[in-house]
Length: 238
Image (cartoon, rainbow, N blue to C red):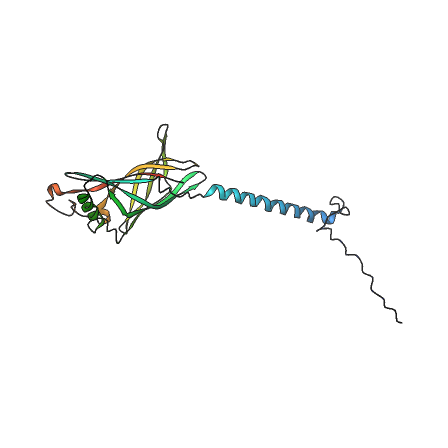
Protein backbone atom coordinates (compact mmCIF):
# COMPACT_ATOMS: atom_id res chain seq x y z
CA UNK A 1 0.00 0.00 0.00
CA UNK A 2 1.37 3.39 -1.01
CA UNK A 3 2.03 5.89 1.70
CA UNK A 4 0.60 9.41 1.41
CA UNK A 5 2.63 12.29 2.73
CA UNK A 6 0.56 15.23 4.00
CA UNK A 7 2.19 18.67 3.95
CA UNK A 8 3.15 19.98 7.32
CA UNK A 9 1.10 23.11 7.99
CA UNK A 10 3.01 25.90 9.64
CA UNK A 11 1.24 28.12 12.17
CA UNK A 12 0.22 31.51 10.81
CA UNK A 13 2.59 34.28 11.76
CA UNK A 14 1.03 37.01 13.84
CA UNK A 15 1.03 40.46 12.30
CA UNK A 16 2.68 42.66 14.84
CA UNK A 17 1.01 45.80 13.59
CA UNK A 18 -2.51 44.42 13.89
CA UNK A 19 -2.05 42.34 17.06
CA UNK A 20 0.59 43.85 19.30
CA UNK A 21 1.12 41.46 22.17
CA UNK A 22 3.88 40.18 24.41
CA UNK A 23 6.24 39.72 21.47
CA UNK A 24 5.92 43.35 20.42
CA UNK A 25 7.43 46.27 22.25
CA UNK A 26 7.24 49.61 20.44
CA UNK A 27 10.19 50.89 22.49
CA UNK A 28 12.46 48.09 21.28
CA UNK A 29 11.14 47.48 17.75
CA UNK A 30 12.26 50.79 16.30
CA UNK A 31 11.22 50.08 12.66
CA UNK A 32 7.60 49.54 13.79
CA UNK A 33 7.42 52.19 16.45
CA UNK A 34 6.59 55.07 14.10
CA UNK A 35 3.75 53.21 12.37
CA UNK A 36 2.27 52.06 15.66
CA UNK A 37 2.31 55.59 17.06
CA UNK A 38 0.71 56.95 13.90
CA UNK A 39 -2.17 54.48 14.22
CA UNK A 40 -2.78 55.49 17.81
CA UNK A 41 -2.74 59.20 16.92
CA UNK A 42 -5.10 58.66 13.99
CA UNK A 43 -7.66 56.93 16.21
CA UNK A 44 -7.47 59.72 18.77
CA UNK A 45 -7.95 62.35 16.06
CA UNK A 46 -11.06 60.60 14.73
CA UNK A 47 -12.65 60.55 18.19
CA UNK A 48 -11.79 64.21 18.80
CA UNK A 49 -13.23 65.26 15.45
CA UNK A 50 -16.46 63.38 16.13
CA UNK A 51 -16.88 65.04 19.54
CA UNK A 52 -16.28 68.49 18.06
CA UNK A 53 -18.88 67.79 15.36
CA UNK A 54 -21.49 66.80 17.94
CA UNK A 55 -20.85 69.95 19.97
CA UNK A 56 -21.05 72.08 16.85
CA UNK A 57 -24.43 70.63 15.83
CA UNK A 58 -25.81 71.22 19.32
CA UNK A 59 -24.65 74.82 19.55
CA UNK A 60 -24.83 76.21 16.03
CA UNK A 61 -28.41 75.82 14.79
CA UNK A 62 -31.73 75.34 16.53
CA UNK A 63 -35.18 76.00 15.09
CA UNK A 64 -37.86 75.85 17.79
CA UNK A 65 -41.40 75.97 16.33
CA UNK A 66 -44.03 78.50 17.35
CA UNK A 67 -46.62 77.43 19.91
CA UNK A 68 -49.78 78.25 17.95
CA UNK A 69 -52.05 77.82 20.97
CA UNK A 70 -50.20 80.34 23.13
CA UNK A 71 -49.32 82.92 20.46
CA UNK A 72 -51.63 85.81 19.51
CA UNK A 73 -51.73 88.33 16.67
CA UNK A 74 -54.19 91.24 16.91
CA UNK A 75 -54.92 94.11 14.51
CA UNK A 76 -56.34 97.61 14.82
CA UNK A 77 -57.46 99.74 11.84
CA UNK A 78 -58.61 103.34 12.18
CA UNK A 79 -60.81 105.69 10.18
CA UNK A 80 -61.97 109.27 10.54
CA UNK A 81 -65.05 108.24 12.52
CA UNK A 82 -63.51 105.54 14.73
CA UNK A 83 -61.71 102.20 14.57
CA UNK A 84 -62.12 98.43 14.33
CA UNK A 85 -60.06 95.66 15.88
CA UNK A 86 -59.70 91.93 15.63
CA UNK A 87 -57.41 88.95 15.48
CA UNK A 88 -55.75 86.63 12.97
CA UNK A 89 -54.26 83.21 13.63
CA UNK A 90 -50.73 82.08 13.02
CA UNK A 91 -50.67 79.11 10.67
CA UNK A 92 -47.05 78.16 11.33
CA UNK A 93 -43.72 79.64 12.27
CA UNK A 94 -40.30 79.12 13.77
CA UNK A 95 -37.21 81.01 14.82
CA UNK A 96 -33.58 80.09 14.25
CA UNK A 97 -30.93 80.36 16.95
CA UNK A 98 -27.15 80.08 16.78
CA UNK A 99 -25.08 79.61 19.92
CA UNK A 100 -27.99 80.89 22.02
CA UNK A 101 -28.54 84.01 19.87
CA UNK A 102 -31.59 84.81 17.75
CA UNK A 103 -30.58 84.83 14.08
CA UNK A 104 -33.82 84.66 12.08
CA UNK A 105 -37.40 83.53 11.82
CA UNK A 106 -40.42 82.99 9.62
CA UNK A 107 -44.10 83.45 10.49
CA UNK A 108 -47.11 82.57 8.35
CA UNK A 109 -50.49 84.19 9.04
CA UNK A 110 -53.71 82.41 8.12
CA UNK A 111 -55.65 85.28 6.52
CA UNK A 112 -58.77 83.13 6.19
CA UNK A 113 -58.97 83.10 10.00
CA UNK A 114 -59.27 86.89 10.37
CA UNK A 115 -61.79 87.94 13.02
CA UNK A 116 -63.58 91.15 14.01
CA UNK A 117 -63.76 91.51 17.78
CA UNK A 118 -65.11 95.01 18.43
CA UNK A 119 -68.51 94.57 16.75
CA UNK A 120 -70.80 92.42 18.86
CA UNK A 121 -73.90 92.42 16.65
CA UNK A 122 -73.61 89.42 14.35
CA UNK A 123 -75.10 91.12 11.28
CA UNK A 124 -72.61 94.00 11.21
CA UNK A 125 -69.73 91.82 12.32
CA UNK A 126 -70.30 89.47 9.39
CA UNK A 127 -70.64 92.38 6.98
CA UNK A 128 -67.26 93.87 7.93
CA UNK A 129 -65.61 90.45 8.06
CA UNK A 130 -66.72 89.57 4.54
CA UNK A 131 -65.58 92.98 3.32
CA UNK A 132 -62.09 92.46 4.81
CA UNK A 133 -61.85 89.10 3.06
CA UNK A 134 -62.87 90.34 -0.40
CA UNK A 135 -60.83 92.14 -3.05
CA UNK A 136 -61.28 95.59 -1.48
CA UNK A 137 -58.90 94.44 1.25
CA UNK A 138 -57.03 91.13 1.65
CA UNK A 139 -58.45 88.91 -1.13
CA UNK A 140 -58.13 85.88 1.14
CA UNK A 141 -59.53 83.41 -1.38
CA UNK A 142 -56.66 84.19 -3.74
CA UNK A 143 -54.07 84.96 -1.06
CA UNK A 144 -54.89 82.81 1.98
CA UNK A 145 -51.63 83.55 3.81
CA UNK A 146 -49.36 86.47 4.66
CA UNK A 147 -45.70 85.91 5.54
CA UNK A 148 -43.10 87.79 7.56
CA UNK A 149 -39.50 86.57 7.33
CA UNK A 150 -36.47 88.15 8.98
CA UNK A 151 -32.77 87.53 9.57
CA UNK A 152 -30.02 88.92 11.81
CA UNK A 153 -31.99 91.04 14.32
CA UNK A 154 -29.84 93.43 16.34
CA UNK A 155 -29.90 93.88 20.11
CA UNK A 156 -30.68 97.52 20.98
CA UNK A 157 -30.63 97.43 24.76
CA UNK A 158 -31.52 95.35 27.78
CA UNK A 159 -33.90 96.62 30.45
CA UNK A 160 -34.23 95.02 33.86
CA UNK A 161 -38.04 95.02 33.90
CA UNK A 162 -38.95 94.35 30.27
CA UNK A 163 -35.94 92.36 29.03
CA UNK A 164 -33.85 92.62 25.82
CA UNK A 165 -35.14 94.94 23.08
CA UNK A 166 -34.30 93.88 19.51
CA UNK A 167 -34.56 95.70 16.19
CA UNK A 168 -36.04 93.56 13.42
CA UNK A 169 -35.82 94.05 9.67
CA UNK A 170 -37.46 91.65 7.26
CA UNK A 171 -39.89 91.15 4.40
CA UNK A 172 -43.65 91.26 4.88
CA UNK A 173 -45.65 89.66 2.06
CA UNK A 174 -49.38 90.43 1.71
CA UNK A 175 -51.41 89.60 -1.42
CA UNK A 176 -48.22 88.34 -3.05
CA UNK A 177 -46.50 91.74 -2.64
CA UNK A 178 -43.36 92.02 -0.50
CA UNK A 179 -41.91 95.09 1.22
CA UNK A 180 -39.23 95.63 3.82
CA UNK A 181 -40.62 96.12 7.31
CA UNK A 182 -38.74 97.32 10.41
CA UNK A 183 -39.83 97.36 14.06
CA UNK A 184 -38.62 96.84 17.62
CA UNK A 185 -39.74 94.02 19.92
CA UNK A 186 -39.04 92.64 23.36
CA UNK A 187 -37.48 89.18 23.18
CA UNK A 188 -37.01 86.73 26.03
CA UNK A 189 -34.87 83.76 24.98
CA UNK A 190 -35.17 80.69 27.20
CA UNK A 191 -34.46 76.99 26.74
CA UNK A 192 -37.96 76.20 28.01
CA UNK A 193 -39.57 78.51 25.44
CA UNK A 194 -38.80 81.93 23.97
CA UNK A 195 -41.17 84.89 23.70
CA UNK A 196 -41.39 88.01 21.53
CA UNK A 197 -43.78 90.94 22.01
CA UNK A 198 -44.19 94.06 19.91
CA UNK A 199 -46.27 96.22 17.59
CA UNK A 200 -45.89 96.59 13.83
CA UNK A 201 -47.20 99.51 11.75
CA UNK A 202 -48.21 98.51 8.21
CA UNK A 203 -49.09 100.82 5.31
CA UNK A 204 -51.84 98.90 3.53
CA UNK A 205 -51.51 100.88 0.30
CA UNK A 206 -48.09 99.29 -0.34
CA UNK A 207 -49.93 95.97 -0.71
CA UNK A 208 -52.54 97.23 -3.18
CA UNK A 209 -55.21 97.80 -0.52
CA UNK A 210 -56.56 101.18 -1.64
CA UNK A 211 -60.18 101.15 -0.48
CA UNK A 212 -61.13 104.66 0.76
CA UNK A 213 -57.52 105.81 0.89
CA UNK A 214 -56.89 109.55 0.51
CA UNK A 215 -53.82 108.72 -1.60
CA UNK A 216 -56.04 107.43 -4.39
CA UNK A 217 -59.49 108.97 -3.86
CA UNK A 218 -60.58 112.56 -3.37
CA UNK A 219 -63.36 114.11 -1.30
CA UNK A 220 -63.83 111.09 0.96
CA UNK A 221 -64.52 113.23 4.00
CA UNK A 222 -65.55 111.20 7.04
CA UNK A 223 -65.57 108.03 4.94
CA UNK A 224 -61.76 108.02 4.84
CA UNK A 225 -59.98 104.93 6.16
CA UNK A 226 -56.43 105.59 7.31
CA UNK A 227 -53.65 103.93 5.34
CA UNK A 228 -51.75 102.55 8.32
CA UNK A 229 -52.97 99.78 10.60
CA UNK A 230 -51.19 98.12 13.52
CA UNK A 231 -50.43 94.51 14.36
CA UNK A 232 -49.69 93.65 17.97
CA UNK A 233 -48.12 90.25 18.51
CA UNK A 234 -47.24 88.00 21.41
CA UNK A 235 -45.38 84.99 19.98
CA UNK A 236 -44.25 82.03 22.10
CA UNK A 237 -42.10 79.07 21.03
CA UNK A 238 -42.45 75.50 22.24
